[in-house]
Amino acid sequence: MLGGGIVKGMVETARNFLGSYTDEARLTTVEYPEERIPAKENARQFPFLVFDGADPMAGLRCVACQICEKECPPQCIYIVKDTAKKPDYTGKLQFQPKVFNIDLSVCMSCQICVEVCPFDAIKMDTEYELARTDRFGALVFDKNRLAKPNAYFHKLHPTDGAEVDGRLAAEKAKAEAKAKADAEAKLKAAAEAKAKAAAAAAAAPPVAPPPASPPAA
Ligand code: SF4
Ligand code: SF4
Figure 1: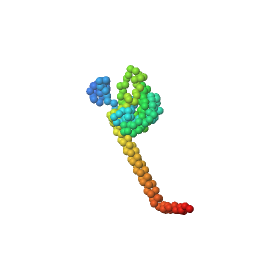
Figure 2: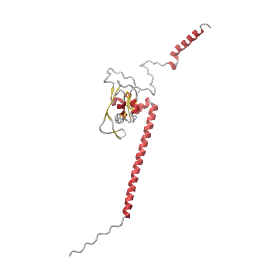
Figure 3: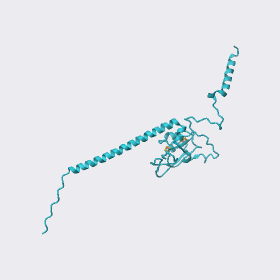
Figure 4: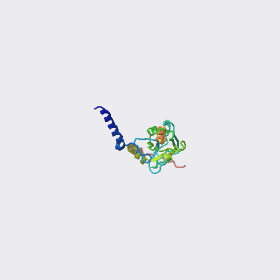
């Protein structure tokens, strides 16, 4: 039919036009800020510090090793290590950062700090509403503002959270088993040394009594 292609094209266009208002899968825009699209699990904005337990400062996993500070491409992490170890949330002594700042106005969300951290202490947040009137001071986040609980990490990234918790629990169990085995080996070695000394003492010849001294003239 003459012009059939045009009609077909117009029908397709009309179908798409109406579909963009009614098809759930195609309704990709929302009335921001009244509505927000939930962040995807692998979304990332800026880093935060993970803590365990109830006290954000005592529970920080960060041991101030400064690897992330060295590896951050735009050098927006600033760390000062405490001079002495302090008890963590379990009472174990560890180094902690005295100062841990990230200048979010410089951070480029590359996630390298997360990749290089050997302690799973720093993770990526999905928070993006950080606009401030003071670009420089207000976007330098210190450790108090950066500290977020492990439960928050799980909420944002449940798959990673489960993997990290499983790995940390396995490492802890391995370390505890090794410490127990070392302690048992030490006790066994001490008991063997004691038994050896006792056997050597029993096998030694009796010591002869000293000769009697002659009577005085
Ligand atoms: S966040 Fe990780 S890499 Fe950075 S200083 Fe703390 S423990 Fe080290
Ligand atoms: S995400 Fe990248 S730029 Fe931002 S603090 Fe981490 S390493 Fe630095």
